[in-house]
Amino acid sequence: MKEMKQSKPLCDICGVNEAVYTCKICKRNVCKEDFDEDKGICKICAATLCQICNSRLSVTYCPYCGRLVCTEDSIQLDNVRRVCIDCYRNGAIKLSKNNSKYINGAIKLSKRVKIV
Image (cartoon, rainbow, N blue to C red; front, side, top):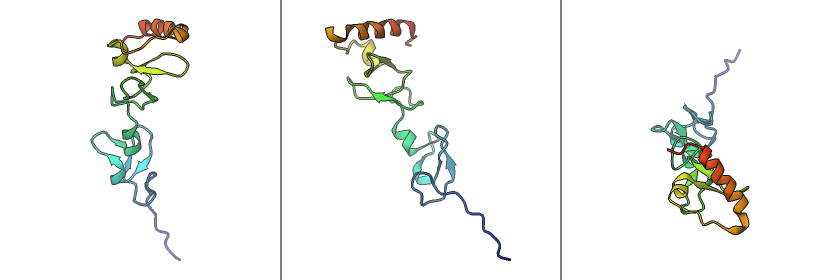
C-alpha cells in the first residue's frame, strides 16, 4: 500500500511557496516572502493599514492629505466622504453650502466621538 504524504498548505497570496505564517488580521496562511514579521501580518494587510493608528485596516483615504484611514481615525463628512481626524482637527475641511446638512451631521457626530 502506498503511503500518502501529508502536504503542507500553500501560501494564500502567491500560491507557490509553503505557508508558514498566519496573518493575525485576515487569518490568511502565507509564506515568509508574503509576511511582515515585525507586524505579524501578511503583505496585503500591511499595504492597507490605517496610516494613523497602523493597527486597523483602512476603509478609504483622506481627500485632504491622502493617507489611508480606518473608521475610528476618520470623520464621516457625508454619505461618501471621510476625512482623517488630523485634517479635521487642523481645519483642512473646506465647507460647502451644498452639503451643509451633511457637514452639520458630521460635526455633531465628531463632538460625540472622543478624539484624543
